[in-house]
Length: 320
Image (cartoon, rainbow, N blue to C red; front, side, top):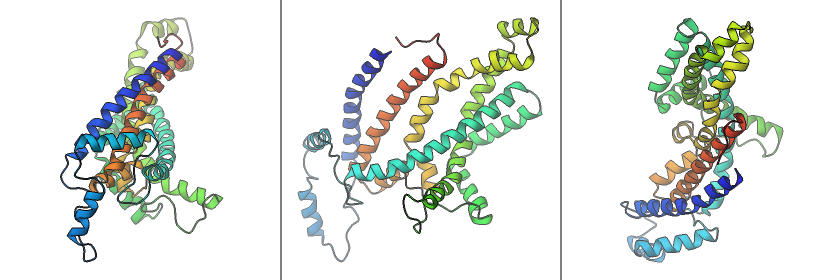
């Protein structure tokens, strides 16, 4: 298994190179630049042209890419033209917000998904199953932006149970207990919104697996031997039905760590997903390139994590 992990990591290097080149080319051929639309009474067009020359905007794409790649290999991903700070510092600040939001979302997602999936599979074609299936259809059809706005309107604007957005109130001092509690308070509504939307796949996988295993030969044999129904479900059905959920865990974690762009944008949550959308709109290409590469790395690592989790959960499976 260790050889496979090392091999996957080595394969990651050319993948990152190809992705970075494609992203850089797409960003380079997009119309406009970070200075587009910045003309105001205090900045003359001549000054903007001077800045374009100074920042190398008119250099050929391969020179710009070589310059960016050389700096990136030294740990310098450039400076954000919108925030005027190094890209690594900017992403580092937003990454922690996304990490904590993703952690809460993941916990809620698996709690809700496993409970509803088990109920739906065990009582299929009955009232609990019909209600849960109806919920999954609504969640699949509901755009995340609309669902987020509805939750903000109901729970933040009308009921005032949660804040409208942001990650923490400015009046709290970082590191104190009230500060930590306030951050958790701000995360509850966006995390619950994301969990209710993203848990649909878990529910459907688990429901389908439980229904299939209920009529499988080894379950019928266990029942014929007089094994209690509770034991049949806990040891034979649920344990095997959870395998597909475990195999997809790495992908889910990688997706959430990449930042839910729409959820973070609707709730004005300062995470990597929100930063990614802002950077595209502002043509902050240094940040866009760095984030896409980071998302690609997380996706590959999520695939590897899924394989490792699967081999741990099911001893019959080994990575070779």
